[in-house]
Structures are given as C-alpha cells and as structure tokens.
Amino acid sequence: MMGLPDWAVQAMSVLTQAFILALGVLALIALVFFIIDRTQTSDAIRRNYPVVGRFRGLFTTLGEFFRQYFFAMDREELPFNRAEREWVYRSARGEGGTVPFGSTKPLTPVGTAIFSNCAFPPLDDHAAATQSLQIGPTAREPYDAPSFFNISGMSYGALSKPAVRALSRGAARAGIWMNTGEGGLTEMHLDGGCDIVFQIGTAKYGVRNEQGGFSEEKLREVAAIPQVRMFELKLSQGAKPGKGGILPAEKVTAEIAAIRGIPAGQASISPNRHPEVGNTEDLLDMIAHLREVTGKPVGFKACIGAYGWLEELCLEIRKRGVDSAPDFFTIDSGDGGTGAAPMALMDNVGLPIRESLPIAVTILERHGLRGRMRIIASGKLLTPGSVAWALAAGADFIQCGRGFMFSLGCIQAMKCHKNTCPTGVTTHDKRLQRGLVVTEKSEKVAHYANTVREHVEIIAHSCGVAEPRLLRRKHVRLVQANGRSIPMTSIDYMPPDENSPAELPTQD
Image (cartoon, one colour):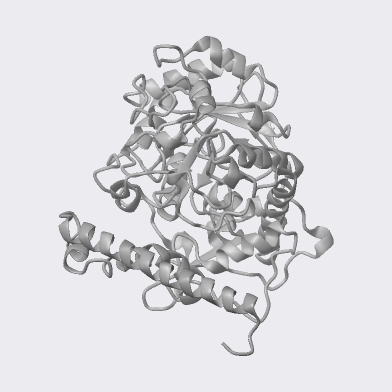
C-alpha cells in the first residue's frame, strides 16, 4: 500500500470489507435456501439438488423471452410468429407494411392459401376501395358499416383503461367499429366517438339486474346511445367454447366490479351459456326481442364445432320468415385468443376458422339466407393474406383482436391473465400502464387498420377484381400433401355426416 494516499487505502479497506460481507450474506442466503429446499416436499428437483435446482424454474421462465429474441426463427413462434408481429408493428408505425429481399413464409405446408393473380389486373384508376355494407335492413336503425376490417370483442377488464381509450380513438380515426366484449360499455369505449358493437355475454354485464338476470331497462339505456350501432349476443368464444368468460380476481378492480355489477376482488366467471337460450327457437326469440327493444341490428357470436344446429336454425328461420333471421353471425375460430381460458378447451375444442367459415357460408347459401345474414369472421385474422382469404371464403366483415393489441405495443409476453403485462395493454397496474400513451397508440391503431385494408385491396386488384368483397373461392388455391395446389372451389365443405340432415327442402 506504500505510495497510496490514506483516503485510497481507507476506500480499499471499506470495499474489501463490503465484499466479504456480501459473500457472507450470499452464503447465508444459500444456506437458508439449502435447508428450505432439502426439507420441502413439493419439488423433487429442489429436494435432490438444493439451491442449484432453483435455476431450472428460472431458466424455464426466462426461456420464453430468450426464444423470442435469440433462438426462434421468424416463422416458428406460436400463436403469432416474429414476422407477423413485425409486420403489424411496421404498419402501426405508418411504414406501409412493405418488406425487402423476399418472403420468409413457406408456401409448401398443406392448406396454405395462395391467391391466383390474373394476367391483366385492373389499372389503378379502375380499382376501387371497398364500399360500406348495410347490416340489419329490417331494424328500425340499420347500420351502414363503412369498413370490412374492425376491432373484435375485448372487454374493459381484460384490457386496461388506456388500451380501451386508444382503441376507441384509433377506431374513430380509421372509420371502423369497436366491439365492447362482454364486460359492458364504459366511458373509455365512447371516448373516441367510434361506432360501437355492444356484446351481451352470458353474465349480461352492462345490461344486468341485481339478481344477475337480464335488465330490459338498462338495455334501452344502452340502445339510446347513438354510438352503439349493433348488439351481439355471445353464445360461445373460440378460445373456450362451452365455458363462459373468465376475468381473474386480481383484475377485478372496484371500478370494473361496479361496471359489471359483481363483487370486487373476486374472479368474474360467466355462465357457460345463456340460461334463456337452450335451442334454436329460443335463440331466434331472444334476438327478435333484443331487436324490438333496441331498434338496432342484432346478431350472435359462436364458435362452430357440431354444425347440425345451424341447419336447424336455418329451417326455423324459413318457417318463421326471412325477417326473423339474425342480422349477422360472428364466427369465432377454435384457435381464437382470450385473456384467460382452460388449456384443455383452448388446445382441443372448436373448429378453426379455415374450416368453420366455409361450412357456415355453405349452409346459409343452401337455405337462401346468405344475403340476409351478414357473416363476420374472427380468429387470428390479422394480416392482409388472412383477411383476404376470409373475404374470399364468404365473410362480409372481419374482426381482429390481437392484431390491434400488437398495434398498441403488445409483445406477446403471455401475461394477460396475471395483471403483469409489461406494455400496459392488459394490466390495471398504474405503474405499467404509464408505458401506454393513448395519443401515440391511437394513431398506431388507425395506421394498422388502414394498412390492412390497403393491402387487402392490393391482393384483390392482383386477382383481377375491383374491390375486396368481389373476391371468391375461385381466387384461392390450397396446397395439398403432394405439394400441388387445388382451387378452393373443388373442396366439399359439407360432406354428409351425422351433423347434417340427409335431405333438405328445396329453396323457395
């Protein structure tokens, strides 16, 4: 230490003592963990390998994030891969959604949809943007929906307050509708002035009386709001068909509890179906009642598995008259998303939209109801290719949830149900919500919606039609197991089986 000033010697002495103390504290902590791990009985790894065994849980947790940034290829991740997310991010930033060099999307997997471009597409000045389409022509207040691409049902509760505000403002800027989800209507939904589709879930949140049943008075109050343009009766959801909505207790704040009419701090579990709706006759009765009370278009949402009931519904409509038909049918995909659902349902139950949409459209066409009931497709349809496919398969509109979550900044952290979303999209933690700046994110929501529509129009024009709703199944080819593709028109989506009556009455 010769030659060093006294203050330097003292500083080194303090640092040395601090280092020794830190080692001692670490050794003490390791000893405590060793005793805890060796004596606990729930985890065999920690019991056999005390202290060291704890790293397994740490690496398992961190692996999800490391894979996203370092190990997974652009097209490998689920439910959405990096290429899809990055496309949404670029579109939301207003960068046009263009990419360089070449596609990373493999075109060989069975079922891949490839659009058939024509040799002589319409010139730019002959192409057209998609026009509005009316829903509910027999309602007292029909809805002329301006956009084929809209925001799917995501409730306040599942989403945070700033997220709902940003979606509302972005939807207004883009001229698209916003579905409330089953959590009821809030001032955040109305904040931006966008068109609203009010979803009535099985728990009747927002139109619920003190006993938990349906309140006609509250329904009239909601219907009197000009921004509310349609009502959607939710029968089932793609991520959890046969199970009602689930909002974990940690996300049921006092405000959300007041909006929903439930106790704060307790999990919000909706019934698995509407008690009033036990068959197709009940469904039509309830839709007719809702339409009469509200004066606005009313439809229903369901995930399709068995589809014999759709045949029965169409037969009942024809018996009652075409005016009794629901104004729209929202088809949710079996691989749809949610804030929380049992893995047993999410992984195994319900047909994906790639099969259920053509089946439903075919059934409605066979009964002459295709023009009366508008079809809304929902479930992982967040890129122009998937949206264009849905239109070609017969959808009139597309609803998307997770694409708009990405436009808000979602990074697919998979923490939606834990109230710890790092981007503030699905958490009610004020500290985490600070990251979501409403004015900034609302612009990104609008950019994303506009880019999707623009690029779907590009696909339509490439196929030789003037606008997206003129796309048909003949414009799509599907890759087969032998590596070759066949026209979508050559696939029979309604083979005879136990779900379908052997004979149907001829159409009038």
